[in-house]
Each structure stands twice: as C-alpha cells, then as structure tokens.
Length: 119
Image 1 (cartoon, rainbow, N blue to C red):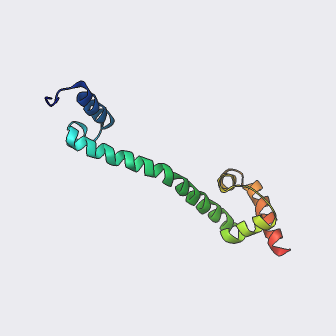
Image 2 (image 1 turned 135 degrees about the vertical axis):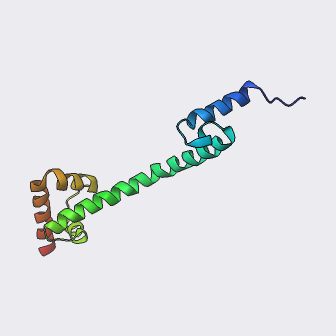
Image 3 (image 1 turned 90 degrees about the vertical axis):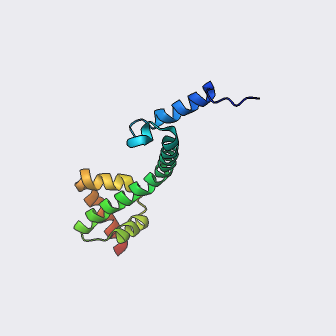
C-alpha cells in the first residue's frame, strides 16, 4: 500500500497544530516541526499552571492577611490560631478581600481572634 503524504488527515492535523501556534515567535508559528514542539510545551505548561494557580492565590491571600494583621499588632499564625479558637470559619480569600476593602470589619475579626487567644 502506498504511503499517503498529502492526505487530508495529515493536512488537517498540521493545520490544527499551526492554528494553536498562531502568534508564536519565529518559525514556531509557521513551521510544523517547530510548532508541534512549541504547542506540546505550551499545552503542558497551561495544564500545570491551572493546578499551580490555586497555590499561587492562596499564597497571595496569606501575604495580604499577614500584612493587614501586622498593622494591627498580631502575626498571621497567631491570628489564624485565634480564629480557630474563636470558632470563626472564614476562608482566606474572604479574609484577604475584607482586609483590603473593609478594614472596619477586619478590625472586629482581629479583636475576636485576640480575645480568643487571651481567654
């Protein structure tokens, strides 16, 4: 059986790869051999980054909460311990948002945490 080199499947596969590689620099957007490697790496990176995004945001929220807590003379770890003892169940995303947008409410939460640490 002869080898098909100009078949539609082959052409469609190459066209799909080059469509994904649109906007890449140099030969990577026009040469199939270079584009398929670039696309494979890009797809792997995007897969990994979708998982890393969750940890990155958590790290950002913790940094924001820590900065807000230190302005109120308490460390992040002591603050979280106080919230746990006071049985306050607010996630870090909401705490970080509160610290930035609603400082008065955050102050009351910090006071609750400090009170729970005292008694």
